[in-house]
Length: 211
Image 1 (cartoon, one colour):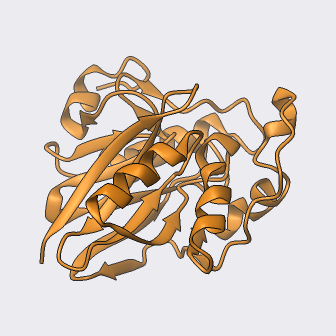
Image 2 (image 1 turned 120 degrees about the horizontal axis):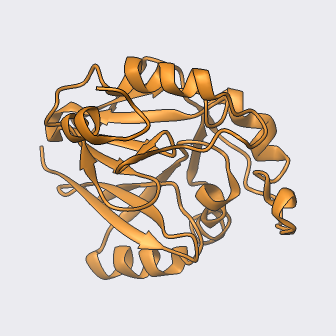
């Protein structure tokens, strides 16, 4: 088993698109494809990676817009989302609130289930439902590489905004304590925007979260 995590900052909102690759088969999951996803596609093509699935931590437009180009380039590619974000996704991911008109996103073909553990060529990836930023937000925990993909739940010295449709500040905080801070302190956090951090660092230093 050989597994690689690649973080690629993209687009005008400094989103992190993340590639999860089995380096034996070269099959790759693209997490949260954002604007300028063609740059990640170019990197994947150059390395011989084979995109097989798009996993969305949540349905806000800046985390899903790249799914359109991926679905066009790789017909039949899996699109995975938590069902609680289906309405947000099908209504454009909140883009209209910012005056942005987007084409329809490709329909999801897989629904995440909270607590499920997905086996990707021998690498176990746990789906942790953590609403608060959006109703269907999920975290992706990969214990074998001590990594949590946190989307917009928690950032380096920050937390997700809760003023958009479906946001709930109390629920967000509850899920950070329940779903993030219960992981080992050394767990690397790859957020939806900005630099990486660790669970232990955020426990001690995040100004939004009491030690």
